[in-house]
Image (cartoon, rainbow, N blue to C red):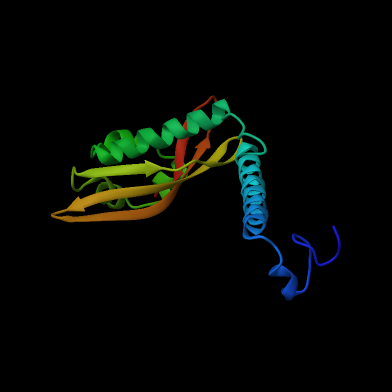
Length: 162
């Protein structure tokens, strides 16, 4: 094709020389190619891995610590002071007033809790918790954390109250 012919960069007066069907064909081809390219880029983005490495499986210590946190919070939920006290470390028991424990465990039976994934190292784990209580029509969510430690022989206790 010679310069200024249909389909090439040309001065504006040369566009008038192009048949309308040729311009439509050229435009349709460009649109189809662009759409195909965008579709291809989108599909390859979805096909990639979501996580570079899966999270490591929890260690047995993590499972024991999580179970202890769950038992303690279940005791709180059920107003079971005796079970809750057994699960406390000596340090926590001796550093708080006994009335404070009674206040913590006493209250409404309309309680619930949430435990988030814990963090820590062997022998000590920290869990973010949410204590949910209901008073009348009002629901209260208290965010806190609980620390669980291994005192030896897989005896796990609560070392920080929520």
